[in-house]
Length: 421
Ligand SMILES: [Ca+2]
Image (tube, rainbow, N blue to C red; front, side, top):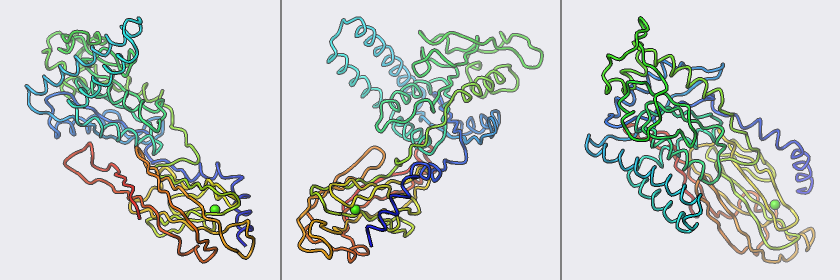
């Protein structure tokens, strides 16, 4: 009976990659534009900037929907904000000096790595929101969105650092789906590149040593008059100047961000991967162990029903060692508990009906973004079809959507936890 079912699944699996790809329908909004604020900005002001940016850029680009979001860095008062910005500034230049010396062969690899780790730790200590920002970008890309970060002022230190953390994180996300557009940046680069950015000729940020040079002559929108009468602090303001309808910088910002969006690539839909996966292996030839998954909506996924409401059992092994594999499609992830259970179906060497079974050592590995955990157990009683509806519970993954309306960096993010059943 089971051999027939498995043969049927194998036939189905000839078209598995295409089928998985079709199941993987990304979020409706193909773009996510995230605003990263500068110093001395309250959350309300940052939210307001995000809304006005959304109004300026519009809710669709090249016929694709755009979602707007906020990567907030908190203001802790004028003095601490300035100290923090200065610290980030120093960390950036220390690293560049280090890279230069390393490139010249003047410092050994171990020293470069040690200093790099130290500077990164220092940087993260001064910017506790960074980890949440990176998780936000990662989740968006995993859901099939292209992410453009529009960073203003000090927000650019965060943006550049977040880009590095995202590029170095495991599992890798396609970095061609992530871009930065810098506005009034105190940094000397844009995510490791020379642009794109916008800094007008009156902006006070030009007084920060090493900041990218002015590349826009600010003029009044009304009559085209060069805006040499604009105060330097005011000329730095995101809303006051860069998004203001009173100046020509607004059109430049809209055009520049649009061009950067054009260059972003859709994240590839990788069949067979998703936020949650489970892999089962064991150590005896000619034995059949089965993986059973109970999804939050009640679907029982196994070799008989390989397609659930959220994930797919794409590999069922019946003749020894495994692997068996289950994964959730990118945007069909359900919030709630996923329970993983095992059934030692048959020792095939002892034939049908089953005779005494050889014991098998099995390992089930559960993975979520940023973590994985393995469970090992010894199974000696083969259950056959009796175990199909009553498999042995082994592990559990709970998925929770964080509700934190007071913190735009964390609100709506997913939290995963792997535990023993
Ligand atoms: Ca199996």
